[in-house]
Image (cartoon, rainbow, N blue to C red; front, side):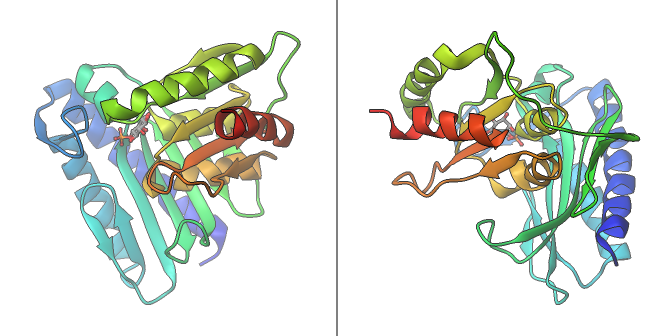
Length: 263
Ligand code: IPD
């Protein structure tokens, strides 16, 4: 299957999954459990949507691997793994804030530091926007080809996120303080996959966040790269809460310096 075929399959399944998420949200949401902290929740809908995606992929691509936020990992035999966040932005979803997305990527390899992302999709069901990408073929929103933006004279429009562990908030806020001098403004949308899609679309100039999981960034990182930007996770002492940065190359270098290198 070509990267374009993988993308087509990801788009078809993400749109189906998004429709299920939207329907379940309209019916009312129940929190199924807390995960790493009380703030880190999973809803019944997260599980149901991931089950739908997993079943659809198993039917279409039975020999591929799977890595999902809610249902874990399965090794395949083809070398391709599907990396899935069924509802990225679960806290928004549970709170009735319509900013959440289905994120699906097909990658070659298992280790996020070394895999090659082949195709991906970030689908926002409420606004019905589907950001789709295939390696070497560009990133698209519908038929519009995406291109990352450069900050204007007023500074960079940035987004970030904060992890669920309250102990890390002070450090993250200190980093925000070091970044604000180059920012036009800062958004904290609550869906990393959407933030990355918006960087690819040039809606945001840049994005940074510590501690993302592979399913949060697998599709969004390829969107940014195919839109002419960079996505990096520099090695640092913070092994667990690795920093992710996305945007144009110059902005990413400057953000990295301010977030990581500053005292
Ligand atoms: C979360 C969102 C959030 C980001 C967190 C992620 P989830 O994903 O992307 O914006 O700040 O780091 O864990 O838990 O809603 O799938």
